[in-house]
Length: 113
View 1 (cartoon, rainbow, N blue to C red):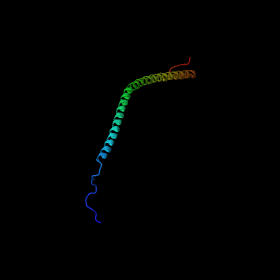
View 2 (tube, rainbow, N blue to C red):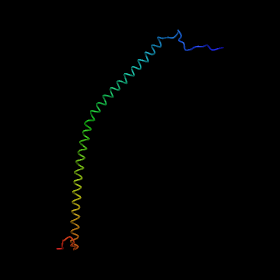
View 3 (cartoon, one colour):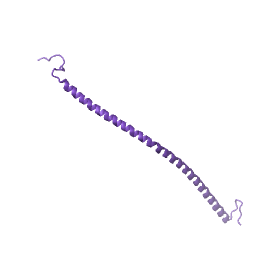
View 4 (spheres, rainbow, N blue to C red):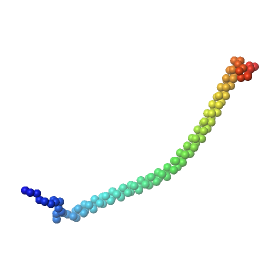
């Protein structure tokens, strides 16, 4: 038996347009509901971001202040270490001088008294 020519995708008169329209309207309503939920979530996240940004400003200021204090303390530490090193050298030099004087050396113009 030979095949008939033409498309087999014909709309028949028995198609229920009202049912298709109702189904599509239901799908549209579900999509719109999902869209509105997503928009609400976005707005909520925007509000959260804004509040987090506001709380970020004082934190940054506190970090800057802490950094300044660290720099000051490091400078004081370096000064104290330099003074301590200088004092240690002075003590070492005095000990060396006493040792030389005790051994009777007069190389530096010192004489044993």
